[in-house]
Image 1 (cartoon, rainbow, N blue to C red):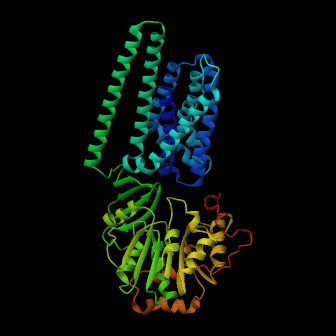
Image 2 (tube, rainbow, N blue to C red):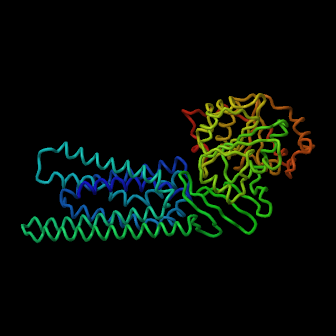
Image 3 (cartoon, rainbow, N blue to C red):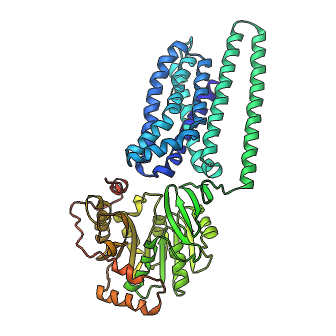
Length: 520
């Protein structure tokens, strides 16, 4: 029984930590600050649990006491979903660093503290009345706990989150811990009675254990069948106003949200795609229109690669508007592809081929050569660092045709202290390609270079003069471009000198994009 407790508690602890990222992400994002806060808060709680558990174990080191601790941990885990959102709403105002840390501690500290007390209690119980075999016994218990943690991590990350969702898993983890803790309390009490020398005590323990096991199995069967029936009735769980689809994938909580006139795709707390219901080829987010400027820089584009799909509005429109262009897309999340096809009308056509693979891995492995590569990949509100580095850009450059063009979507600021992410990426891009052109969405209207916006950077070794590009825009690249507002897109050209002496080139070894994105 003791070994089962140690193993299961280890699994539940790490499973809870993995689930913690999905609890925080819809409100606080999925940045490195979120993960750093989760890991730190769990380690702080475990340290406190080890110390407190060791202190209490010397006074009440019994299986019954351990069962009470595990039961309490199960109860605190079970009630977590009932107050987590209130904590997240409060912590979201504390900033990108303090917010995730405060939320992690407030939501997960107590259950992690209680689970941290399991190991010292288990050691005290295992060594009761013994002096030999201390090393072997302690090593075995630590190995069991670690093995449980490994299993909990892998099961939760690889299978359970995409299969059942976060709330069901947190509740199920709490119920499992509560049942296991009660089992230990009953087993410890019965064992104590049996130790008094009565045969009835042994029989009582056996009967109670059998009954409790049957009850646990029955509860698990009922809960499992209910989940299966719920998934069969509604495999796409809707939650919240206007939400017509919601699912936990391996990378995001994906939501599709309808309004009266538009449909939006969200990753966690971040909007990724918006389309007009009356015209599903029109984007509600104007940055997608700027990719059409690529034809003004290179009118003979025939093959395009998009790194990142989202709802697919940009590749879908390019597929429709330019029949002579073939398009490849690299998208890491298979659920995103399914959603783009079902809810955003992404066509299944030989000219628009989507590969489910990490964008950088796709670039490294493909044998194709492209006239245009569009880099538009984000986790919720964080950019994958490995798609921002000098090494990545060198890989992309190898896959461009002579005179090929890159278009990179950056969320950043053009000038000022908060512009360091943009300027770091600009320095990295301009160190790979000889020429660049920068467009800040709506910059032409406001001339406000200090506001956060989408910034599109075009880069190539052979960009034409801007007078030539402007003329092509005016004649809508020989009448091929039907997108309204192409002239407005070009008017957002940011022609100022971009200082880069105070920022670093981003490399695989050093690319602190989360910190740079959230500079205050």
